[in-house]
Image 1 (tube, rainbow, N blue to C red):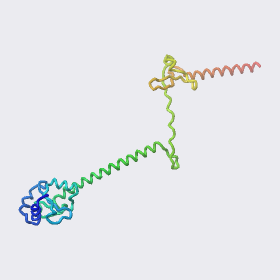
Image 2: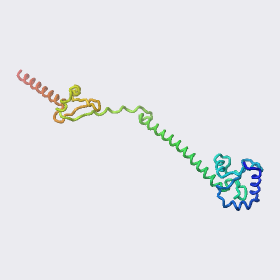
Image 3: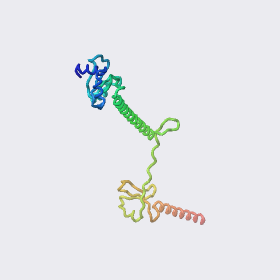
Image 4: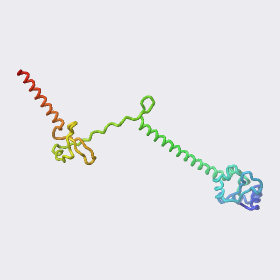
Amino acid sequence: MASQESHAEAETAAAGGGDAAQAESQDVPMEMQQWFFHPEGGEGDQAVVGPVTFQHVMTLLKSGEIYAETPVWSPSLPGWLRLRESPLKDVYQKMHAEEDDEDEDMVGEAGGHGQANGVTAAAAASSSHVSNGTGGPHHAPSPAPEEEQTARMKRAEYEAVDEKLRYIDPMDGKPKMFNDTTMQWITVIFTDGPQPSEESAKSGGASAAAAASSSASSSSSA
């Protein structure tokens, strides 16, 4: 806080008694001047605060202690002015514009997170439920079984594999071999001859044909 004399000098100069000081101060940059202000509801000399530096004015602006309607004065001014009418108005407007931008960024980030979370939740719901055509969701159908894994090799190569790692499937007659990479049984397709299942089919067909021929001969003899 300034002394009573400083308050009186500020009031006298602001009233027009400091023309010489004003003329000398007009060439001094705003950032290097001393400032006085009337706090809210202040009256008389005791209510005048100052002189304070420009940096202190910035602190008071940020804290909200002074604002657009606060009366301010410096030796470069002809008298007391509202802050919004003084050279400090540009500083005030810039400061509040930056604060507004920060607020908008925070709101935008919050909205973006909310939207992203909403999209993620919707995608999760869509992936786990499928519309049944009546507006009611039901569980998605089970995935199709995995495609049968196969390997192509010559019969001799297959027969050279340890018998513990290969067998002929009695269900479909296909040769199977254990793949130690995938740790699964795979179907083997011979590249140099018919599959065992095809051989069984041919053998079975030949036997059936022979039986039919024998039966026909017996009937003819009778």
